[in-house]
Image (cartoon, rainbow, N blue to C red; front, side, top):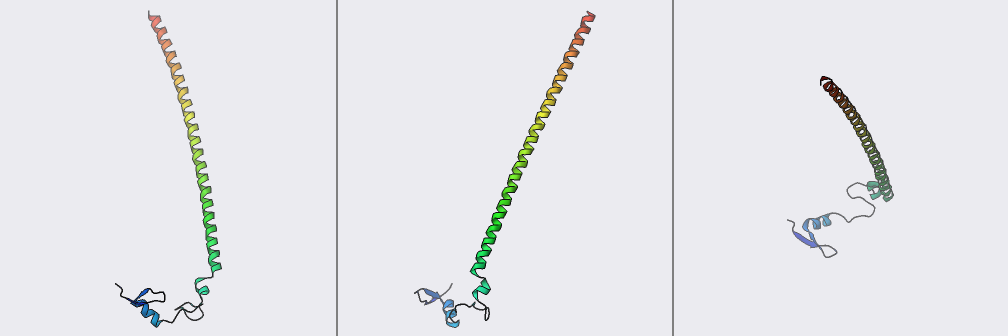
Length: 125
């Protein structure tokens, strides 16, 4: 647990370690990055606001492009699904037609066999 000691310029109590740091370290200097050596500026160390804005814009453009590509892929996938469904329905219709044709042929064969059987029975009588 930190011991509280000292008060900053706003009247807020500071932890003891912050007070010691403020006593030992010099105040911040505008245009310098502490502990990075001479000549290192915030812009050279962190990058300029403009380059950050450009980077954000680039990233936003990349995200937008990725979303567009993902949307196109989703649309293509949906079209493929619809085509597969259409093909499956067409095959179902074709199979049903084949089944109906086979039933018709079997019914015709049954009727023919029944007629021949009746004729043979009539010939015996």
